Image (cartoon, rainbow, N blue to C red; front, top):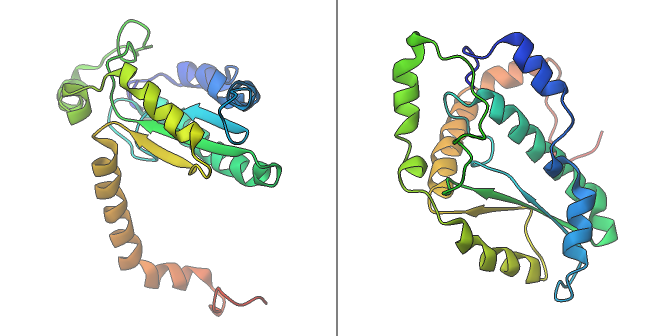
Length: 194
Protein backbone atom coordinates (compact mmCIF):
# COMPACT_ATOMS: atom_id res chain seq x y z
CA UNK A 1 0.00 0.00 0.00
CA UNK A 2 1.73 3.23 -1.09
CA UNK A 3 1.51 6.40 0.95
CA UNK A 4 -0.56 8.23 -1.63
CA UNK A 5 -2.77 5.31 -2.56
CA UNK A 6 -3.64 4.34 1.01
CA UNK A 7 -6.64 5.96 2.63
CA UNK A 8 -6.18 7.70 5.98
CA UNK A 9 -8.86 5.56 7.71
CA UNK A 10 -7.17 2.39 6.49
CA UNK A 11 -3.77 3.58 7.73
CA UNK A 12 -5.11 4.63 11.15
CA UNK A 13 -6.84 1.25 11.60
CA UNK A 14 -3.70 -0.57 10.53
CA UNK A 15 -1.44 1.41 12.88
CA UNK A 16 -3.86 0.94 15.82
CA UNK A 17 -4.19 -2.82 15.28
CA UNK A 18 -2.54 -5.19 17.80
CA UNK A 19 1.19 -5.63 17.24
CA UNK A 20 2.20 -8.57 15.07
CA UNK A 21 4.00 -11.52 16.65
CA UNK A 22 7.50 -10.12 15.92
CA UNK A 23 6.75 -7.29 18.35
CA UNK A 24 6.14 -9.81 21.13
CA UNK A 25 9.71 -11.08 21.64
CA UNK A 26 8.94 -13.07 24.80
CA UNK A 27 7.71 -16.02 22.70
CA UNK A 28 10.86 -15.92 20.56
CA UNK A 29 13.14 -15.67 23.61
CA UNK A 30 11.55 -18.80 25.06
CA UNK A 31 11.67 -20.65 21.76
CA UNK A 32 15.38 -20.13 21.12
CA UNK A 33 16.50 -20.27 24.77
CA UNK A 34 14.99 -23.75 25.12
CA UNK A 35 17.08 -25.13 22.28
CA UNK A 36 19.59 -27.50 23.89
CA UNK A 37 22.43 -26.45 21.58
CA UNK A 38 22.04 -22.66 22.06
CA UNK A 39 25.01 -21.25 24.03
CA UNK A 40 22.88 -18.44 25.48
CA UNK A 41 19.30 -17.22 25.57
CA UNK A 42 18.51 -15.38 22.39
CA UNK A 43 15.76 -13.50 20.67
CA UNK A 44 15.44 -14.23 16.98
CA UNK A 45 13.19 -11.84 15.13
CA UNK A 46 12.57 -11.91 11.40
CA UNK A 47 12.13 -8.65 9.57
CA UNK A 48 11.77 -8.14 5.86
CA UNK A 49 13.81 -5.73 3.77
CA UNK A 50 17.14 -4.08 4.33
CA UNK A 51 17.29 -1.84 7.39
CA UNK A 52 15.63 1.52 7.01
CA UNK A 53 15.72 1.42 3.23
CA UNK A 54 12.41 2.35 1.67
CA UNK A 55 10.91 1.32 -1.63
CA UNK A 56 7.94 2.81 -3.48
CA UNK A 57 4.46 1.29 -3.08
CA UNK A 58 5.12 -0.27 0.34
CA UNK A 59 5.28 2.79 2.59
CA UNK A 60 2.76 1.48 5.11
CA UNK A 61 4.74 -1.77 5.33
CA UNK A 62 7.94 0.17 6.05
CA UNK A 63 6.25 1.90 9.00
CA UNK A 64 6.09 -1.41 10.85
CA UNK A 65 9.58 -2.56 9.87
CA UNK A 66 11.40 0.64 10.80
CA UNK A 67 9.58 0.71 14.13
CA UNK A 68 10.48 -2.93 14.73
CA UNK A 69 14.16 -2.24 14.09
CA UNK A 70 14.20 0.66 16.56
CA UNK A 71 12.33 -1.41 19.15
CA UNK A 72 14.75 -4.33 18.85
CA UNK A 73 17.86 -2.16 18.97
CA UNK A 74 16.56 -0.69 22.21
CA UNK A 75 15.55 -4.13 23.54
CA UNK A 76 19.03 -5.52 22.82
CA UNK A 77 20.59 -2.85 25.03
CA UNK A 78 18.03 -3.42 27.79
CA UNK A 79 18.50 -7.20 28.04
CA UNK A 80 22.26 -7.40 27.40
CA UNK A 81 22.95 -7.53 31.15
CA UNK A 82 20.87 -10.72 31.36
CA UNK A 83 23.05 -12.40 28.71
CA UNK A 84 20.14 -12.32 26.27
CA UNK A 85 21.18 -11.67 22.70
CA UNK A 86 18.83 -10.09 20.17
CA UNK A 87 19.37 -10.76 16.50
CA UNK A 88 17.39 -9.00 13.82
CA UNK A 89 17.33 -11.14 10.67
CA UNK A 90 16.81 -8.86 7.69
CA UNK A 91 16.10 -10.91 4.57
CA UNK A 92 15.86 -9.77 1.02
CA UNK A 93 13.14 -11.07 -1.25
CA UNK A 94 12.26 -14.74 -0.86
CA UNK A 95 9.81 -17.05 -2.63
CA UNK A 96 6.94 -16.63 -0.16
CA UNK A 97 3.37 -15.40 -0.29
CA UNK A 98 4.46 -11.99 1.03
CA UNK A 99 3.21 -10.09 -2.00
CA UNK A 100 0.59 -12.65 -3.01
CA UNK A 101 -3.00 -13.17 -1.85
CA UNK A 102 -2.09 -12.54 1.81
CA UNK A 103 -1.03 -8.94 1.08
CA UNK A 104 -3.45 -6.13 1.85
CA UNK A 105 -3.69 -3.75 -1.07
CA UNK A 106 -5.23 -0.34 -1.45
CA UNK A 107 -7.33 0.68 -4.41
CA UNK A 108 -4.89 1.44 -7.21
CA UNK A 109 -4.72 4.89 -8.75
CA UNK A 110 -3.98 5.18 -12.47
CA UNK A 111 -1.40 7.91 -11.78
CA UNK A 112 0.71 5.30 -9.96
CA UNK A 113 0.90 2.75 -12.78
CA UNK A 114 4.52 3.59 -13.69
CA UNK A 115 5.58 3.59 -10.03
CA UNK A 116 4.10 0.11 -9.56
CA UNK A 117 5.79 -1.14 -12.75
CA UNK A 118 9.19 0.13 -11.59
CA UNK A 119 8.69 -1.41 -8.14
CA UNK A 120 7.89 -4.79 -9.69
CA UNK A 121 11.30 -4.86 -11.42
CA UNK A 122 13.44 -4.56 -8.25
CA UNK A 123 16.27 -7.17 -8.22
CA UNK A 124 15.00 -9.09 -5.19
CA UNK A 125 11.62 -9.47 -6.85
CA UNK A 126 13.17 -10.95 -10.01
CA UNK A 127 15.51 -13.37 -8.22
CA UNK A 128 13.87 -14.40 -4.95
CA UNK A 129 15.73 -16.54 -2.44
CA UNK A 130 14.72 -20.02 -1.34
CA UNK A 131 13.19 -19.86 2.17
CA UNK A 132 14.32 -23.41 2.98
CA UNK A 133 17.94 -22.32 2.59
CA UNK A 134 17.60 -20.10 5.68
CA UNK A 135 17.29 -23.03 8.14
CA UNK A 136 21.01 -23.74 8.40
CA UNK A 137 21.86 -20.05 8.48
CA UNK A 138 19.48 -19.44 11.42
CA UNK A 139 21.10 -22.27 13.37
CA UNK A 140 24.57 -20.82 12.70
CA UNK A 141 23.43 -17.49 14.16
CA UNK A 142 21.89 -19.22 17.20
CA UNK A 143 24.98 -21.36 17.78
CA UNK A 144 27.50 -18.52 17.69
CA UNK A 145 28.87 -17.29 21.02
CA UNK A 146 28.43 -13.62 20.18
CA UNK A 147 25.68 -13.04 17.63
CA UNK A 148 25.40 -9.57 16.17
CA UNK A 149 22.29 -7.43 16.42
CA UNK A 150 21.70 -7.49 12.66
CA UNK A 151 22.30 -9.97 9.87
CA UNK A 152 21.16 -9.97 6.25
CA UNK A 153 19.78 -13.11 4.62
CA UNK A 154 19.87 -13.26 0.84
CA UNK A 155 22.06 -11.88 -1.92
CA UNK A 156 20.54 -8.41 -2.39
CA UNK A 157 20.30 -6.63 1.02
CA UNK A 158 23.98 -5.74 1.55
CA UNK A 159 24.28 -4.01 -1.82
CA UNK A 160 20.96 -2.18 -1.31
CA UNK A 161 21.91 -1.01 2.19
CA UNK A 162 25.44 -0.01 1.18
CA UNK A 163 24.22 2.26 -1.63
CA UNK A 164 21.54 3.81 0.56
CA UNK A 165 23.81 4.42 3.57
CA UNK A 166 26.63 5.83 1.41
CA UNK A 167 24.12 8.32 -0.01
CA UNK A 168 22.90 9.24 3.47
CA UNK A 169 26.42 9.75 4.82
CA UNK A 170 27.33 11.96 1.85
CA UNK A 171 24.22 14.09 2.42
CA UNK A 172 24.76 14.35 6.18
CA UNK A 173 28.42 15.33 5.68
CA UNK A 174 27.51 17.91 3.04
CA UNK A 175 24.93 19.51 5.35
CA UNK A 176 26.94 19.20 8.60
CA UNK A 177 27.73 22.94 8.75
CA UNK A 178 23.98 23.67 8.67
CA UNK A 179 23.39 20.98 11.29
CA UNK A 180 25.96 22.58 13.59
CA UNK A 181 24.42 26.00 12.96
CA UNK A 182 21.03 24.58 13.98
CA UNK A 183 22.51 23.37 17.28
CA UNK A 184 22.55 26.97 18.48
CA UNK A 185 25.00 26.54 21.34
CA UNK A 186 28.75 26.26 21.29
CA UNK A 187 29.58 22.80 20.00
CA UNK A 188 31.68 20.86 22.50
CA UNK A 189 33.84 17.82 21.91
CA UNK A 190 31.32 14.93 22.05
CA UNK A 191 33.88 12.71 23.83
CA UNK A 192 33.98 14.94 26.93
CA UNK A 193 31.29 15.31 29.57
CA UNK A 194 29.85 18.65 30.57
